[in-house]
Image (cartoon, rainbow, N blue to C red; front, side, top):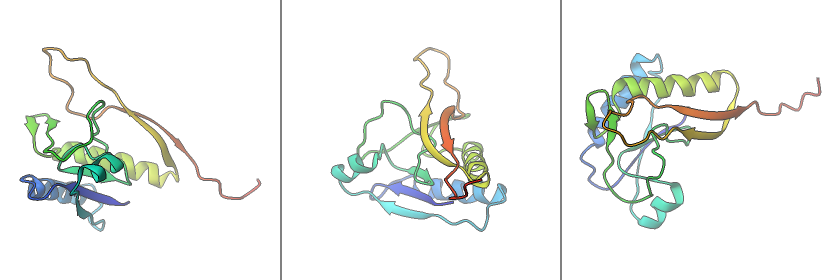
Length: 145
């Protein structure tokens, strides 16, 4: 599993995101997995990689917390958590994203598409958990049986 935290220079939530991610990896039985951080410095790079704010956590190149209609840019990012808005996903959200990624990898599948459900604006709070529909495929092994 390849995990990366994308940040703008001087992101005030870098430490929070890294601590929560490390905790989620450790409590998910994935303590041997590390992660890297990368600084996104320009709007062109943000647009090229689909960076919608700092911090962004990529798991196997995908943002499990992506929000539909958020445009790429060099900005701070807020996450909907069970406790309200926060500067990083909470431990439960990270644990769930890691569990899903590990299950896909363990099954020998590769994610080909991902769509996150957009919840309408209402006075009711949106769910804090990620709701994703995706398509996965098993890589061709070359075996003709």
